Picture 1: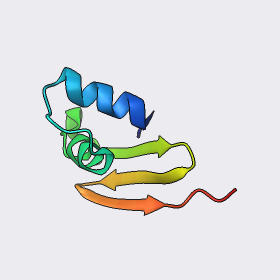
Picture 2: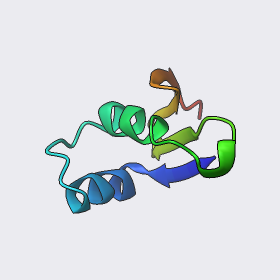
Picture 3: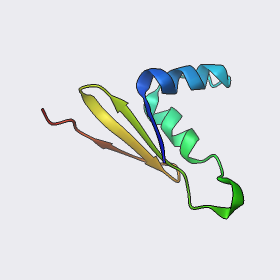
Length: 68
């Protein structure tokens, strides 16, 4: 699993030269980065405060609402 918030996701994207701030796109790309040693696919979870949480597995994004 890779956990982070939207600010961390955007900072990573900027650091590696991805010209986007779209959290769903960033999560998708991160989920497609291969794991070493034949491990299962990377699961990416990006929180966004009170906005929906983004989960990406194998390039497929699902969002989950935050219930207060």
